[in-house]
Length: 68
Image (tube, rainbow, N blue to C red; front, side, top):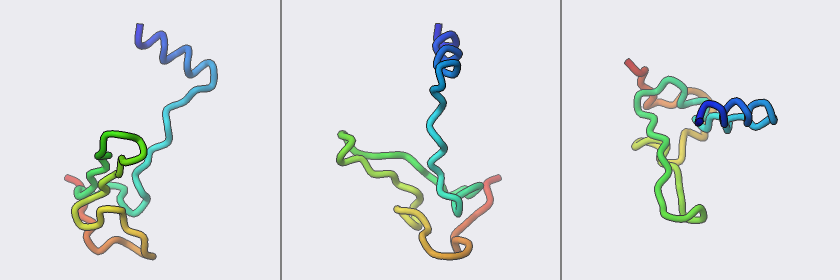
C-alpha cells in the first residue's frame, strides 16, 4: 500500500522534500542534522557538534572530516 501511495504522489507532482544538508557539510562524518524540539516553532536542527547552526563562512569548514 505504501508503494502505491508513493507512485500516486509522484504522478501527481509531489516529490520528496529537497535534502537539507548544507553544501559545506556534504560527505562530512561530523554531520548530525537531526531536529530537536516538540513543536514546529521550537524545533531547531543541530548541524554538528562543532558548528551547531552550520558553517556560514566562505571556504571549507576547518572541522570537515570525510565519512568512512
